[in-house]
Length: 186
Ligand SMILES: [Fe+2]
Ligand SMILES: [Fe+2]
Image (cartoon, rainbow, N blue to C red):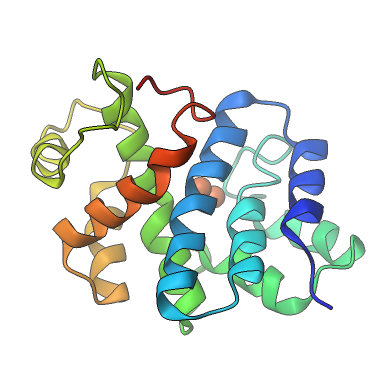
């Protein structure tokens, strides 16, 4: 039996006390899980990887440690290599191949979900009526959510082989049911 989402949440929250980081994990979990369903893949496994992808960021906030120094911790916690490989693959600086649908999906949901969250924070109804068009417009404003790497958003969709607008709409839709948990109105 593979690891459960519940187990991953327990690991995540043991290492991550920051509300913002927990919300980020939940947002990526929502998008990645929705894609697993759409692709007919192992949703539980994909959600585990999504929840854990930044689990060590609070204890390893720099790229010389995150996420590579988190990997031995996950091994010790008993997570299988498919989880560890998936987690490591999201880090651009490690240059690992994103050679599975899971890795492509995680990468495609990571920066984008953060950007969607930022879009929702400045709207009176959160992400309830957020359209791809307005997300794309904001992507072109460098000063808005400046920490989000635009290039990774575009490349994520490309590598996954999905149209950017459809991808944005899909991830927004996946995040809507948990908008409250993400601290968004509406
Ligand atoms: Fe990360
Ligand atoms: Fe992340």
